[in-house]
Length: 367
Image (cartoon, rainbow, N blue to C red):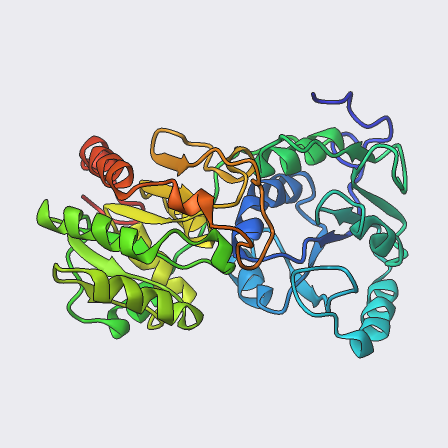
């Protein structure tokens, strides 16, 4: 439930903070879910200097979203933070730099606050705001709001900004594409299928526990190919094994771009696809940002929190298992959340989504 607006509004009828830090040191999908909140923040503070405190990879995120974020302060990790190993020798310099910046406001948008609130306070900003778990440490009850477990990640961050006085500017995701992204895609493969004629199959995910079975991805791909769609396999270099497993299990022709596309080229490929079939991973959020229809097999993650808000264009299929949500790197049991989702239901849903959205407009491209 939305709380009453902050009694000491930081945005709106008052001069917004001049220097703002946003602490969200997370991976691609998590960052894309924060874009609507960053958009609201920039609209409420158009002249403020906004720094993202994030992971090293987010250099490219800041460059792509320069309309909303001005620069990056690299977070070196911290004990008990799971996103990367803590580089202990770099932590004192990081904290010294954060303090030297003398931020007027530090927004804690990195989880429920149980780990991140004590760290955010060490930035020594004039004010801080964010989330806290009731009964646990709350740096400032005037500017921190309770964390709610059963809340969509996009709407959660917007709720914080609205509480602080920054109205939402839409809840849609974005992934700006440039001509350079499309040129990079052409350099990867000159014989790409025409826009709207192919399906991207992305079987990877950062955590193996979040991956559906390669043989079932292959079965879905074969059925779509037999229905007349071209099939393109995608994945990072770290996902080469699972992409290869899908390709080797397929019986129909396939274009394998696994490990061959940088992020911008991959997003351009997805933007021109008829459909994306993937796990609940960063690629599913790129599909949502590009308005490319998708079928998402959710293994281990929480669909309530991470499923695309557009539940007509994007269909999430999951098994109702007691151990969800799961943060194990590798499933410690029989991977029931993956095993209980059959290829038949995914292939049928994929065909339905293609049929329902085949005449859509491809963002950035003419029909």
